[in-house]
Length: 119
Length: 112
Image (cartoon, rainbow over all chains, first blue to last red):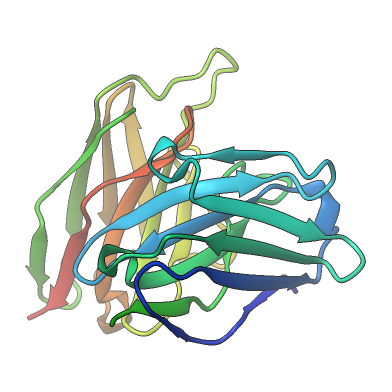
């Protein structure tokens, strides 16, 4: 079965960077886009961007352009999301989510990674 | 960017009764390939969001048939024919016809 296992919770100071990993299993890793979605406390989900694990190509939401970098390691079926210049408003749960053969959007989700930005 | 607007923001339903959630998009979600790229998710407390409905009306694997999606163009509805206690959580609609993907504000379903 499809599994997406994310790295553990992080606490960062304002101005720092955070890198969250998402290890995929149970399907062909390079066949489907991986998306990153975050949810701040009390708010709805917010799409950050996606990566094509085969080509490594990315599309980012304009809001995060210049601050987010998504990468992948095909040898370990892992994608990474790095967010820099963190501020308190970046405190959120970050999810990775993959497509599948029938769903061209977020079909399967990781368990989420809480990133807390606090001085 | 496409704006998704859900109503109501909260819903309290007696078990066994139906429930309905509306979602409107600022642009048509009907693609030239004939598909409507509208999705419904349920986010239960302490869990990851789970996909219920994709491409307007297709139930995802394992989703009970009491969940159904309908609508067209810019107006969509998620219906639960008979609400059960396990259906509590926040429901979101989402569009994928255009990047960035965008979500509604969410509808919180509670059990009376």
